[in-house]
Image (cartoon, rainbow, N blue to C red; front, side, top):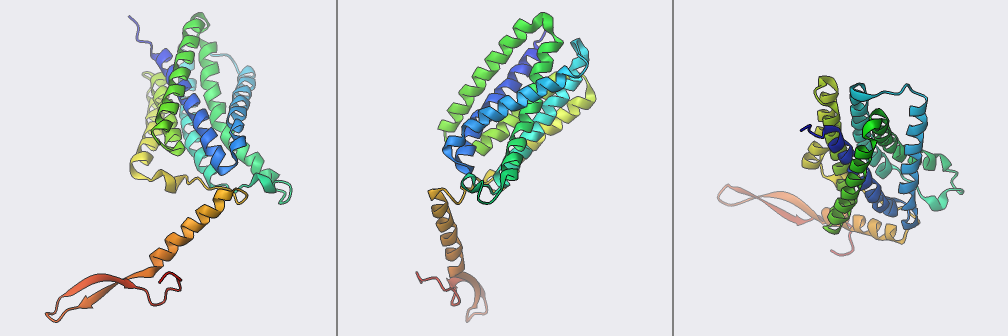
Length: 268
């Protein structure tokens, strides 16, 4: 019995697509406004449509010759997912000042950054379905099953208070695993897919996701004042204490924290 390598790979990539799309609604509701959650669906459709147009202008690949390009598309999709998350969370963009500050370019860049991962994800799905027309029904079934599992996993993990940024890194890792399966025995694309898998895994283990991709509210949101106040209070409390060394009569020294006499905090 043949191992369903491509079917499993396509299911994993589609699971990553839906996980990312659902989690982006949470990210957008914080960094923009809640009613911009639809932007996740819009950018996904834009990316898929763009990939379809691009592939229609390229020679059609069928059978085994399509495995390597599909694997590389999955690798790029995984890397673009991580890069897009970082760029979105580092962009200071307030939709309420769109016309006042003439920052339409920021909105355009925002949309492009989010569209890029979906462009390469769309290439994976479209190329797979086009490369194996005789198994299109099986492939499409794997697509639907993977998408359903991705939706279930995203909702279940978000209900367990897993952050949206962590979920997007997980989506990138799942997509990279799909790339490993698509690569098969082809060494170079397989190495690229393994590297793409190692990056989100290493980031999850070694880097705090909130420091890599912090979710900051725009100034127009009421929560922005609360976030600013919390940050200010944290800095003030850090300034209240100062670590010093105290010499004892027996010649030993100890370290202790004392109130900083130069602090101007009113709560002293």
